[in-house]
Structure formats: C-alpha cells, structure tokens
Amino acid sequence: MTYRFMSSTARTIHQCRSLWATQTKSALFHSHLPEGLLAIKQAQLSVVSALPANRSYLHTSTSIWSENRNESEQPIAQLPQLMNNPPHIVWPSFFKSVSNLMSSFLIIKPYFDNDFSLKEFVRGTKQALLVIANALAVGDLDGLKELLDREAFSEIKENIRRFDSKQLAELAVPNPEDVYLTFPYQVGIIMNDNAKGVQERFVEITVCFHILRGLSELIKTGDFQPGPSSFQTHRDKIVICNYRFIREFTKGVEGQWTVNLVHHFNLSNDS
Image 1 (cartoon, rainbow, N blue to C red):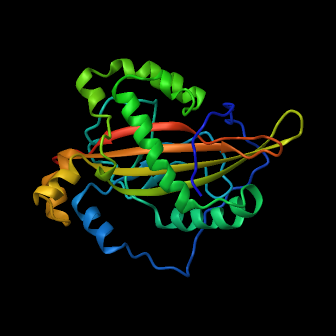
Image 2 (image 1 turned 90 degrees about the vertical axis):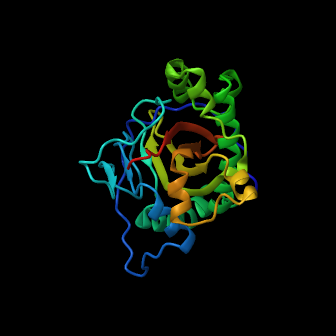
C-alpha cells in the first residue's frame, strides 16, 4: 500500500485527557543491532534525546525523552532551526521499536486502518522528505501548504527567514540514494474527548532519516566503503532529519497524513 501525504484540518491537541500511559518493557527480546547499522553507529555521535512534548500517548510516558545522552556534552553543530524546540533524534530506541510494532499491529491496524503497514508507511515518508526538503531549499513555502500542519507551516515560515542562501541550499536532498538509513522512532496514539463528547483519535509517527550528501557519487568513484572509517571521514556531509507525521482517525472524519515537525541538523566533525 502506498501512502500519500495530503492536507487535513489542523487540530490543537495540547490538552488531551482520559488517557493512560505505560512504558512497554519486553523481556522476550534481546537488543542486537544489524551489522550495517552497528557500523554506522560506531562512526557517528550516539545521541538520542527529545524535548518534552505537551501530548499524551497511549503507549509511552509524557515525561522528558532522554536516551543515551551525556548531559555534559557540547551541543552538536546544526543549521538554524526550522521549528521551535525540536527533538534531536539520531538512533532508534529498542523499547520504543517494540512498542511501535505493538501499536501498529494491536491498535492501528485492527481499530483505525485495516490496511496500515508501518513498513510501507515509512517507505512513503521518504518521498515526503524529498518533496518538503527540496521545496524549502528553494524557498517554495506555498507549495507545502497541503503537506504541512498549519502550526508547523507558520513556525517554518517565520524561522526560515534566518537562513542565508547557503543554509537554504543545505536543506536540499537532491538524490534519494543519499538517504542511507530511515526508521520510525516513535508511534503515538492520541485520544481526546472533545466538547461534544466525541472521542478524537490521532496517530503520530516520528521518523528519522540519515543522509550522507553525495553518497551515491562516492560509491560510484570508489571513494566510499561501508564501515566506521568511511563514515568518520565523511562525517561533515552527514545530515539527520526528524519528521513527524500526524493523521486524524476520529470516526466520521476523513483525515489525511500531514507533517507537524520538520528538523534538519548536522553532526559535528569533532564530536
């Protein structure tokens, strides 16, 4: 199934109630990274953290997200922020990954969307990344009104004024082959009883993309071989993108996927 990202009615969902939150723990699994991902992780900055979001999730605590980060570390080098107070997500969380699968198979698929596939969804988000990033790089905000949440559009329109032409160009992802790693970081189920007593239901999915600028050309010329040393050598070309997608699944509402978080940042050379 191919997912399209179209416009939907933007909703304010900061005061969700009648919710319960739990942290999924599984003793039936052991955390082993695939060999390729392990090689990448050894070469890059192992930082996964996110700022507290004013949302209530069915599957996770609403306390501050903080994983694998040394608070004494200096902030990583980054572009000006497109949005205010964005998360800095670099690596997947094992427990969130287990929770994501459970939410997908036990809640979203049987109760919200029988055709939902997390794998196919993530595949579709790559196209959304290319469209949004390349439009931002040339300042085409009007072309993104159908893809971005209303609040996200307003923040980006305000903050992008701080970008110079060089920084705008760095937002571009001209070659999809340069996106070498994509994973869903967190799947959130949001529920809220509105003033009419109707239970509003939303799904939010945060996706992380790893981009190595010019990767396809480096491979063609033989200047890149997968492994820690190659990623370390080309560290200054690595960009991380955090995008969050949201869709309303309230009964009787024809919601569509939109994006309410766009964040691009670089990994520092000396970290």
